[in-house]
Length: 350
Image (cartoon, rainbow, N blue to C red):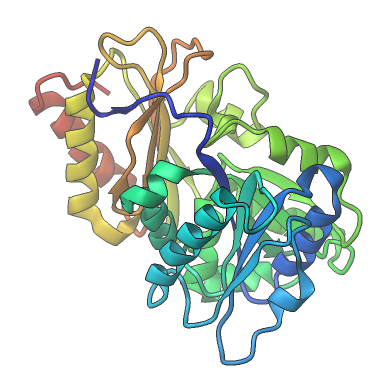
């Protein structure tokens, strides 16, 4: 067994949902609606606010009564230690029954937060990683202003590229043509995310249920589940590259014809993110490993390579990685990874 594969996670680790979205995109409105759903009653909330006077935390309250406010700066940068402290505080208050028991935590970030460093903190701090497990990254995008924000603000682009589920909000205020154009752009920026169109107060209960029951980490990669049309286009047949509406962002798919060794794959991934740095936004995929009967889930957010996750209930002949990159020519990425696969013992040919 490869030491790089994360062991089966204990049930007692508390799920974390990271809620991101650019300024004014409707994160708090969505969160308030979600918390009104009975199935989400036992939810603790961490609200990250900028400025001396916070507002968002006055608008949301988990039915568990556990709401903490982080006001000392954005948790993707200066206040990251506060996030760790807050999660530790929630855990011990729960353990000692100082607050009602909660079953999950939602972290609502500021509109200017880059999800990557926050995800890194959740995985890299050993005490937090032992007690919490990231379930999904949820991002809100404004149907009226989102198209311009994606072009003007790198944070908005990072949020969309990092998402497992995207809520296209305020669709009642946008024209059908504008909403369709933005939805198509988002599918190209992040073909792996589930896209849901919403208007305030009208999210179907099935959506909240799906979020609650979703397997940890990227359920939309599972071959046994339906995939969006863009993802189907990537998989069968898979073009080598998808050019994106946003000229700086590109999605590249690499298929492998035989299994990797776990150590070789990790080395190839680490060398790739070390070489290309900030040009790598996200890497996801299902990859066959030597000695494993089922594929492993591979996840990279910016420069952080996460431990591989066994997918015991998934059987697939596909072995692939999807790269979401910024300003990086597909051929440069393909050539580098091909070289790594060729010259690393245990590498798999593309």
